[in-house]
Image 1 (cartoon, helix red, strand yellow):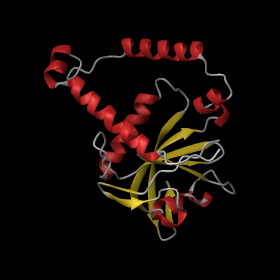
Image 2 (image 1 turned 90 degrees about the vertical axis):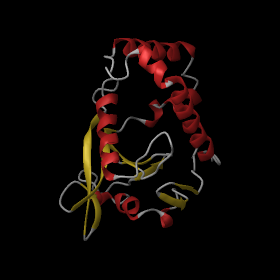
Image 3 (image 1 turned 30 degrees about the vertical axis):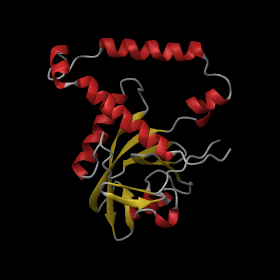
Length: 208
């Protein structure tokens, strides 16, 4: 299984660091790597996976995703309110295509023992709560095993296309004339370019 490491770099609102170096993690991350920081993970090993925008904590049955306080151009998570809104939007939007996977938004609190999920203490952040899916069912694993062929990809594409065609339009942005006026294509291309740029900067090595 490939291990992707993000390089140390400076993003707005976050000092340059190697996110997978446990000795240089923000206190929130090191605290949430403790099993006793999670309500239903006693005695378990908590695994951390880092993306360009989130810290993802995996226990045996659950996943908690905390937004990193970064500004990457196409997203800005520097404030607590922005991260709360992003978590709520992620659950609201994604549960439509993944029912039963997105379980809600959990508060991250801090007291004299450190950071923990729920309970008492000062509210310091928010996390998306998901049901953990088997690693062997991921696209990466299926592709490596030769089980992600053209027919399967076409079925996914058709489902997404049908979903988008049937989705209600947002009145403010659903009018094609207005989208042209706003230069939506330029905005989408810019955001996609920034996103791909962050991904490419993040892949620095792979241990097989």
